Image (cartoon, rainbow, N blue to C red):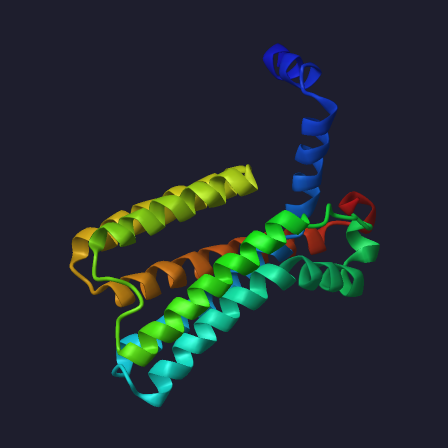
Length: 214
């Protein structure tokens, strides 16, 4: 108890504010629900690339859909969560004004998405697989994604989810599945994990009396 008090007393105001905002941001489960739906959509689009041959209309459409999804979601994620909270949860959890995404981060996100889009279009036109068949990419994606989930959430459920995602990526790397199939499974697993976690948190919050939701 004394160690915890000592840590809080030595925490800078900026660090404390970030921690409290992060806790408030994740208390209703909406970010996890939205992210879960996003990953399930990504998983479905990649699965279409497994089922349908390269050069087919569905394959090209799924590739372009994947690119558009990766551009639209990062840029609109905060706006979607904000609107959902204003519409359904203001009386339950109050209003929290989140720090807007910086212009530098928006520019970097858009630039990266633009590069991915150009590479994807080039790959489709040339009949090249978007992802090279390398099992290390499966393991790396799982480990990197798990680390991001644990670091960004900084709550026990995010850490557990990050560990499970990393373990799934490593298992898929040794399973011998194709890269696209592995990525579809990995993103699908992450989507289900995030969606279930968010729904559980949301359900618990909605069962609480209104005065305890503040």
